[in-house]
Length: 381
Image (cartoon, rainbow, N blue to C red; front, side, top):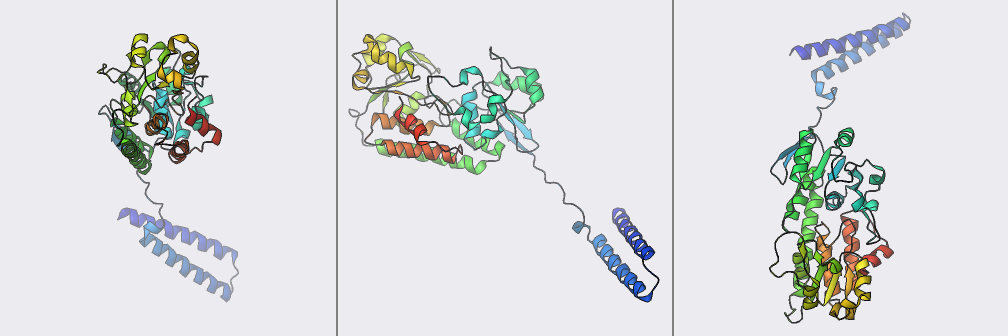
């Protein structure tokens, strides 16, 4: 009530000052008195109405944009607003794709470490998805140690990591951290849905999840009639150093209708080592390499000459676009269709694969691939 009285008093005082000013500058004629009286009545009425209805004059109350989420290590993380600057730590390649696939690559604010820079092994598009990171601060040194003074100087709105110790280290410095975890294939749904809420892209996150399910469903239907005798065997990894880097290959190769030769009761750890003898014994129909240089080694070294895949030319380098499609990445639905195209080109043509790749990056990454880029990724050479 007191506030209302004070507000009315203020408005009336302003009206009196205006009237006094008008009166001082006007002549003392009847017409001027009439004008002054009219102005006085109008202003008094307006001021009274405004005071009686203060909501028409006062600015609106500020909207509370704060929100809280629970990350994948069970920590509650609060935000005053949707984060606009995001730094990634550790597995930067895959972490960046979680941001980029929701159309937010322009929010990444730190430079990637040298091991994620483009090499001759595969011409990726990490720079194109987040060009501002090229000149951004480097927050991790050559020993993979966080340069904490640089992080505090940058003070990003959000830090992303897949390492619990890193999350705890950054939180102790007062930084806002989201921990993402990816142990099995279904974890990608939770991670994308979480990032959708954090980035204000919940609808796009749900579209991604629906797309993922749809691609897997299409793959299952396309390969449903393959008999065990018709299914092709395949090996993914660094073929010439005899290692398979990611257990996720035991998901995308079978989903594409293939038989992974390393899916043989292997340990559940990420990487898996085998021997030359294993390779010669398995003799896969198709070889999926993790780097282009391996194709030359496999086709020129006589110790591999008798392998079926070498004889038939069925050796392909798995694309790296935002991240390697052979490892954990939000691009995993493309891994399935790309592998199916190499295993069973009669089921997925080059044109169908090209169309899927173009749609994916256009719709989710907001990036339009050129015909040349598409051809490179489809070919896998």
